[in-house]
Amino acid sequence: MPAATPQDAATPLPRTVRVGYGLGSLCTGTFATVPGLILLYYLTNVLAVPAAVAGAAVFLPKAWDVLINPLVGALSDRSALRGGPRRPFLLIGACTLPPLFALIFAAPPLRGAAAAGYVAVLFLLAATAYAVFQVPYVTMPAEMTEDPRERGRVLGWRVGFLGVAILLSGALAPAIAHADGDTPESYRLMGIAVAVLLAVGMFGAWAATRRAPAVARSEAEPSLRAQLATARSHRPFLYLAGMWTLQALAIGVMLAGVQYFATYTLGSAGAVTPLFACLIGPLVLCMPLWNRLARRRGVTYAQWCASLLYTAGAVVLAFTGTGGPAVGYAAVVLVGIAYAGLQLLPLTMLADTLAADAARTGKRRAATFTGLWTAAETLAFALGAGVFALVLAVTGFRSSDAAHHVDQPDAALTGITAGMSVLPAVLALASLWLLHRYHEPPTEPVPLEEEPARAD
Image 1 (tube, rainbow, N blue to C red):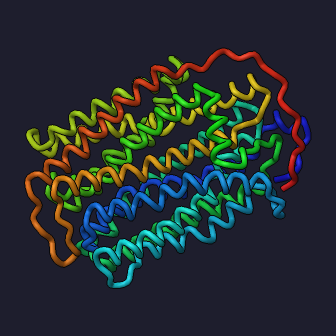
Image 2: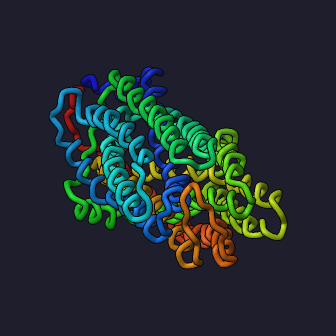
Image 3: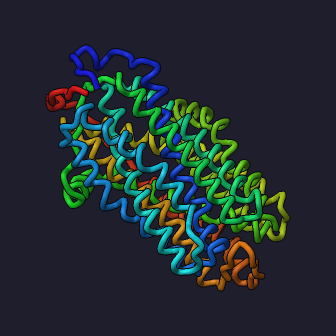
C-alpha cells in the first residue's frame, strides 16, 4: 500500500480499490459455500464413506483454522515483505488455494476410509491456504480508511460480491456435479470450475488493492491465548460473536443438508439447484432492503427481524413432508430473505463495535477481533457439516458410491428433514438470547494511538 499522509484518512478511495477489494469475496463466499454444500454428500454418496467418518473429514480440517488464523495474523502484522503487510499474503493464497481446491475433488479411485483420508489432507491444505488469504483480507478495510462512510462503501462492495459468489458457486457447483449422474468425473470438472472462480476473485483483489493507502495500522495479539484474553475484556464483542457463531452454525447445518433434502425429501438430486436458488436468490434482491431497514430503525432491530424470520422459515421447512414440495420451497424462500440480512447485518454490527472500541480505548484492535470473528465463523460452518453428518450416522444413513445407490431407512429420512429444519431453528432461537444481551455502551472518544503508516 502507498504511504499515507494525515489528509489521506478523509480522502475517498479510488473506485477501482473499492470494487477490486470486493472481488476478494468471490473467494470467501465460494469457499464458505461449496464445501459446506457439497463435500459431505460427495463423501457419503460418491466415495462410499460412512457418515461419521465423512463428518470428521469435513470438520477437522476446518477446525484447524482456529489455530492457524492467529498465526497468520501475527505473521502478517510482523511482515517485512515487499508489498506491505497484507497484499503478499493475498498473493500466496491466490497461488495455492485454487489448485488445492481442484485436487480435493480429483481423488484417485479410492473408497471408504482411504478416500476420506485423501479428501481430509487436501481439505486441510486448502483451509490453510484460505486462512493465508482471508485473515489479511478481512483486516484491510480498517487500514485503508478511517472514514466510516468510506469504510461502509468498501464493505458494501464486499457484501455485494459475497452475494454474487454464494449465488453463482452454489448454483454452478451442484449443476456440474450432477450433470452426469454424480460420477467422480463430474465432480472433478466441478472442482476445476470452482477453482477458476476462486482464482479470479483472489488475483483480482490482490491486483486492485495495489493503490490502496495505509492510513492506519491495527495489530493482532501474537497468540490465540492473548486474543481470547482481549476478547474476554469486551463483552459486546463476546455476545455479538457468540450470536453470529450460533447463527453460522445453523446456516452450516442447513447448507450441509440441502443436497440430502433435495435427494431424499424432494425426491431428486437435481432439485438442489432450484432449492439453492430459492435460498440464495433473495440475497442480492433483499440485501438493500435490510440495509434500508437498518438505517431507519437501527441495525440491532434489523438483526432481530432477520433472526426471527430465519427461525420461522426453518420451522415451516419441517412440514415439507406433509405439505408437499411447495411448502419446502416457500420455507426456503423465507430462509433466503432472512439469510440476506444475516450476511449483512452482523458485519455492520461488528464494524460499529470495533469503531466504538477504538474510540473508547484509544487502541486499534481490529485485527485481533476480526481474526477471532473469522475463526469462529469458519469453525461454525465446518461444525455445521459435522453436526449434520452426526445426525445421519445416528439415524442409520447408508453410504454408497456413485454406481450403487441404496434405499434409506425411515429413521434416516426423518433425520434428514429434522436436521435441515428443526436443528437450525433451535440454534437460531439460542442465538436470540445472545442478541438480547448485546448492547454497545456509549463511548467517550479517546485519542487513538499514533502508529506509523507502512509503505506497500
